[in-house]
Length: 318
Ligand code: NAD
Image (cartoon, rainbow, N blue to C red; front, side):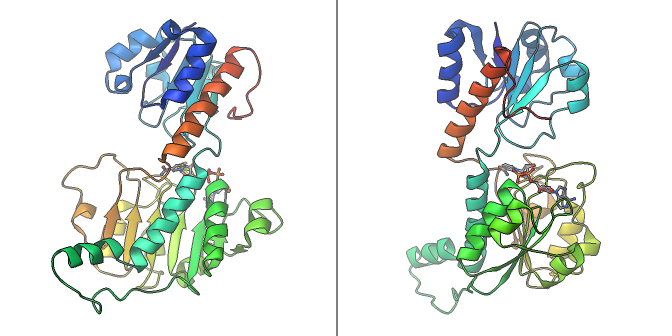
């Protein structure tokens, strides 16, 4: 038995694997995804592979893998995994189902307050000897409209939190009916995309990156938003067209953006969005909290073990 872990993982999940199969059966190298040659050698005799979002699990990477039965994904998005190749090779994928959804929802709430109340800037200003009450007049979230694009595990958690703060929550998700659980339980009013972009004060994206959602948010939609709108993307880079977002932010046809994800991560230091004051970028941390990483690490370890032991994991990708 050999379990290969090619990216950062938390100790508690690794411990579960060690307890089951012995420490000598686990190869953990958080930098391995960067070294294709070493990766090709290590994957050759691995029974299980555990990755985060940097390891590109594709035909080239899997070519030397003759024993591989299961890939564990420490997270939710599957855009770094070529599912067609995986299926052709009879390998299964298990993922960290819902283990970081609450953390991402809390990130969105943080982004809303970050935008409406400049607490960190005001505190810094005071340290610099000032007392600028007028400059730091904020705005309330109460009564504003939040538009969610995608109302799955994360979207509906955001909706519940936003409604508790007095926001009106509308949503666009063509795969849900008004009777589906995430809609009924979160009280989101389902609308068409055109209505959502026109009336929302805040727009938050919670869709997977697929060929259908790539460039979903383009200049046509950005141009229909209010000049006061804030766009939040904690789903995946590539869902917003970054060049067109730059145009909208630079020309102030929308007020701002908070982006946790970019098409290329980390971005080139010359990336135009880095230069804009109305664009806040964080390094893909929405789902990264201590709690969510312990949950993810343990869940993926347990579900990889399930598959290695011949059972069907409840987190198996269908
Ligand atoms: P989910 O599968 O539970 O929900 C996705 C929702 O998007 C579904 O309800 C689906 O019907 C909807 N959808 C699909 N295509 C759509 C479209 N074209 N328009 C509108 N809605 C559409 O997934 P989730 O757990 O809520 O996660 C969403 C995404 O968030 C993940 O795919 C992942 O890429 C991203 N994510 C990011 C982080 C982070 O750290 N930044 C962490 C976790 C997840």
